[in-house]
Length: 284
Image (cartoon, rainbow, N blue to C red):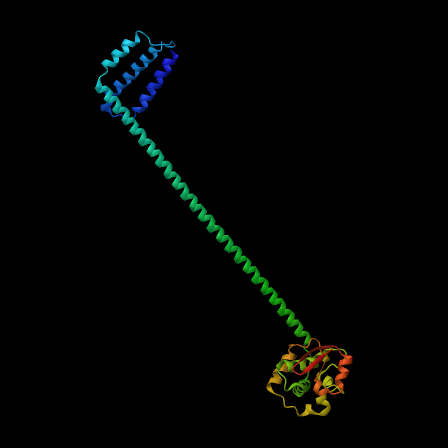
């Protein structure tokens, strides 16, 4: 009996679920279907004898009689009701699938936007890192240049000497006499050697004393220094040397080998060769 009750309850729930969207004018058809389902259930359980095997002798005629008495219209109405319920269920399924599809599309769009935002954020962070890196590199270069500039200024300052107007005129004439036909660097180099001697403890402390020290510069020995006509280029080169511009590598001597004669051998034996430029060889 419990089995019959459970089956009947399941049938009722199923029919109710089909009848959710049934309109009021179809209540009669729904009642007929309900009654028919109950009769079918009773016949089915009677045929099994509620636990026995084979057909029940009393239930069989009743089943056949009920089948003969079942109106054709009710079968049609019941079928139309089931069909409408299936259609409604199909619509529900269609709506559910549409919602799932819409949700999937929305989720995909959200993920795509999120990926685009993450990519944009990554590019922005990379750009910011690049800007910071370039700024740091620029600051490092600036500091290096400033340090180099300070070092050069300190070096130039260390090469600046005290001189009088007479010292200045002597320096102009000796540079013109020794390197008048040389380029700018050649003129500055001769001035560098004179300044190096002034700064050195091995030589006198003034330009005039260095230049007129005996047997040091040929233009002094032969008097060419007195007739030298100083050019504007020579003045500029001497001024640059006095401001600290230096290419001498500490040279204290120079000579023109072609014009030095036998004195050249003394340079070779007693001094260290550094370099040559524009006809002059420089030693220390």
